[in-house]
Image (cartoon, rainbow, N blue to C red; front, side):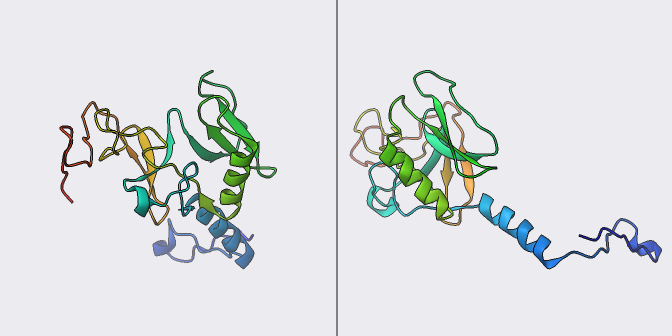
Length: 178
């Protein structure tokens, strides 16, 4: 890639006019696009769609999740250890969950989802983000990262509030604004 700067007048200061090869632009685009994977079509564990179960798609929390990493991660909490699976020379998939939960079949599903440029997720019930009274899903999965249809991820902070549940016959029911 040519990095020759072409400053010909004062208005060009602070701007770069350089030759960029098409292949370099495509490589940069692919790296950017790979970071924003869209969610897979169903929960990794129960295989229900978000329309069937409701709530939000959870990708990572302290004790459950999957994410990609440039380095090998392993161990950590003995009850909820991290396990790294090598995808290629530069990338790993890190699996976090209860000790012994990652079977060969589940690992194969995760690999397939990542190889399809998607992101695996967990529903509220599989991630244990349910009401302590009635067992229905909570309005917000506090302490979790959630993924949206476009692949954007946001964190639902655990700030010491009760998000309530979606069951309108439960005493813990809360209706939040739309």
